[in-house]
Image 1 (cartoon, rainbow, N blue to C red):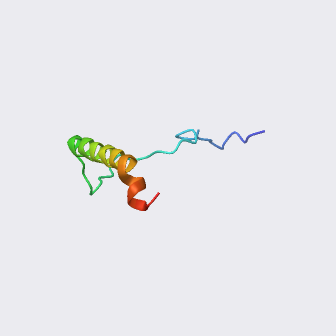
Image 2: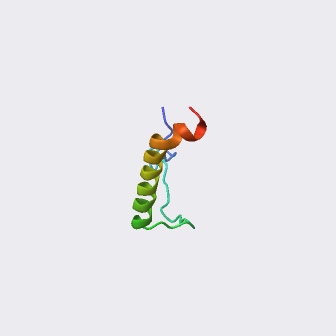
Image 3: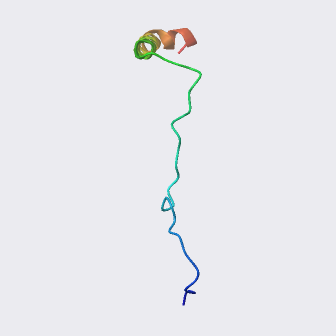
Length: 58
């Protein structure tokens, strides 16, 4: 049985972890740069599928 003069406080966050959104990345990408990068990678993959086997001798 609990002592009557002891006060128990409930846990503040219920065991949840708090993450702060104050982190600022030093690398910034604009959406246009990401789209251009994706298009370049797709073109590179298509070129490698077409000519890659000849380049490595298969």
